Length: 449
Ligand SMILES: CC(C)(COP(=O)(O)OP(=O)(O)OC[C@H]1O[C@@H](n2cnc3c(N)ncnc32)[C@H](O)[C@@H]1OP(=O)(O)O)[C@@H](O)C(=O)NCCC(=O)NCCSC(=O)C(=O)O
Image 1 (cartoon, rainbow, N blue to C red):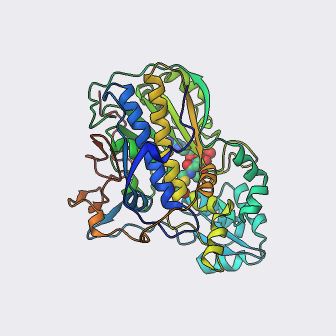
Image 2: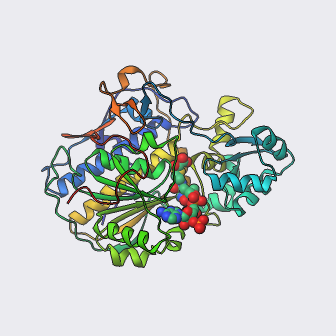
Image 3: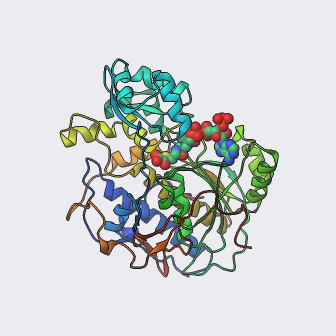
């Protein structure tokens, strides 16, 4: 059994272009290598499913790969909503810095409750001044909120959770199973994932990047969210190529419908913290019973062992915890947290999740048993920290008109331009006939038969 364990060696793929996102870390190198991981695994899958006789070499456009780690969509004649809630951000406490993540209403409520303020930014700044940042982090997390104190790399590597993360493999594979893949007569060398049904229960950026990637090679992706859920700052970017439906899994009818969809899915990708799916009635036993032939890949924020294994989290918080924002501060000569220029932990984890799905599909197509794959933002941070910067060429700062497709995309909000794809694998070039659409706008049904 050889399930994906690491980034592919550089001789396994071709790269065009040069440049680097300005950073203390090898962000552009990570971007190119994580696209390459998808391409490499897709090539192997194409061979395993007899779409090609030999795996074609992946071709990654280095500049575009870096740009896709930022925003892929540029609205024409309208503005994207802000990515951040007005209170989200970095604050100085009595003994250091802390970041609050308040984009989701229940996370905002938890933070404001601990700070005992109704809260505009000025009131929150004032309230945090007297707090020890690690006490504040503990109290907000205890209320079901999300926040992270800034730690140095050395502090993180000495922290019980930092130590636990370094014991996690890049992709943890668990629970060997044998599965039988469905025939997909639609699949072709230029659209290798056509007909592949991917059930997507991921949120914000990391998980949704993985399913956007699979859709880019033809997969039928159906995203499920709780009724009313929205992430306005990111959905136009990451709902590309997907259909999005609401289902209330706390009702018997919603749960039954979800199980029906899962039973028909080839792939299940989710970003529910350890235990969160179980609480909704979708335990591993239920998933194995309902959908024994699925491939399953998931992510969490802080890793799969250690005291923070079930902690809620986002890229910008993991950057604070894991010493990335502090190393950026030192590199930039700044007096405040300095994060990566893009949310690289999310994006790299997303592409690696897509590569993990393809790796498991290849094993299954080759008649081997598979396992469920687990990734985390914190483990991806360790991968980033281990990469050397090799960047030559001009800094990659912002996308230019030539980086975008010439034709506009009619998204669910209005027209816009999408970045040109960064990856091709033989005849297969990423593209998305389905434009970005709002959450909850499709029926919870599969498009492909
Ligand atoms: C994404 C999260 C932070 C979201 O946090 P929360 O909304 O607080 O998560 P929870 O799972 O606890 O869900 C909150 C509640 O919603 C309920 N819930 C969830 N889905 C449903 C549906 N479909 N129907 C009904 N109810 C639902 C769930 O049971 C909980 O109920 P109650 O228990 O009754 O309240 C977390 O899930 C997480 O850390 N996931 C792992 C890492 C990850 O994916 N992070 C986002 C990507 S990082 C990223 O993209 C970025 O940084 O940007």
